[in-house]
Image (tube, rainbow, N blue to C red):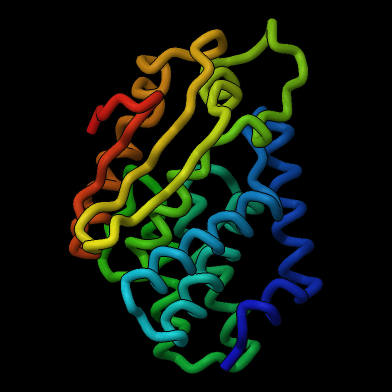
Length: 219
């Protein structure tokens, strides 16, 4: 079994993640580098462990999370599909069993809104973990006067918490938003499709999805 830690330490993978993020920086996107993929992996671990999935499934989920955005190296457009193909080649060369490769590739290929579908539990956990990573530190632009709507929304989020209740019936995304930089309407303008996908992902895991902004329940 290839472990998440081995994936993290692989020099080629680290290069792909770094170069993919450099391309997104050139296009004006928020941070998609090691901070993002590590946070997504940690949230996948939290979701799957909390819901009682096996350690093997948790490991595969974290591997998928760490690799999920490498397709941005090819192009931002359809990066989930190109990333899945890249992950297949990487993991096949590392001799990961075919069944495990299939699980990881499926999750990566289905993580993005527009084309993604939570077809299995790993894919569902990855969707929730990825789409909940909204935070001020992802904004690269230091000039607040030139913020676009993505900068404003991410910068406005002072705190983001993904939490499953004790009954394992509800997963809640709680955001603390500074409305000086971005409004709740701004958030929905760019993230509504993502939140709908999160609701579908939660349902795949047997959960209800709830979004709360500044203690107000919105979904």
